[in-house]
Length: 205
Image (cartoon, rainbow, N blue to C red; front, side, top):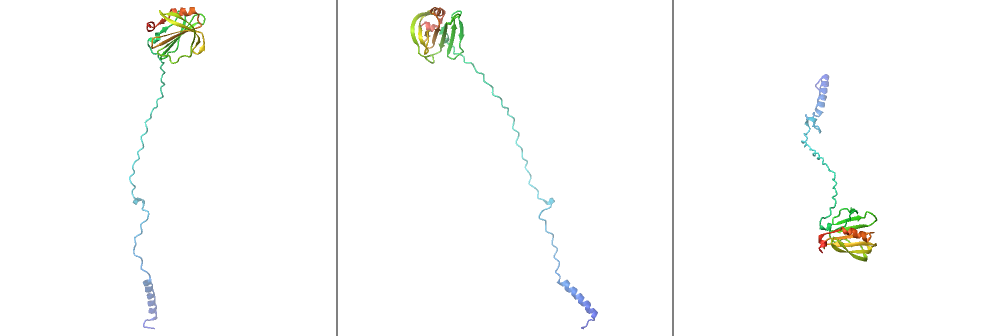
């Protein structure tokens, strides 16, 4: 068969098959660098933005709350003036009691050593704030007080109530005074008025 010996024919066929397989294999892929990993290595991590230190607010200074200081009450001092001496009835031996101080009023009560006879003297720096209720007179008489003549009225109603009171009034045109005798005999009234005093402004009227 042909011009090749049988042994040579087999070698040629083998080489031809090897060459055919070698020629039909796809060429090896070119050298491609490996794809970079999606996650960068720790050494290649992006540097973080410089952090700004947050300053804490300074502590509030402690504020001491002082306790309220109680204000001492100032007693009301009566206004001083000639009106306080407009009339004075303080018989010797009688117990005298003065009312608490007021701005424009003074009250003094004198009580006889025996019995219930007493006289109440009220002094006002101006016109009394209230009329004091109705008064009804049953009689009156003239009395001498510190060299001045005044009218003493005996009432059947005093300050709106049924009461027998011997009362007299005095004023200097600005200030007013009243003396009221309760449960006193005419002799006791005269005795008390014998030592009574009036302001000059009253005596000069």
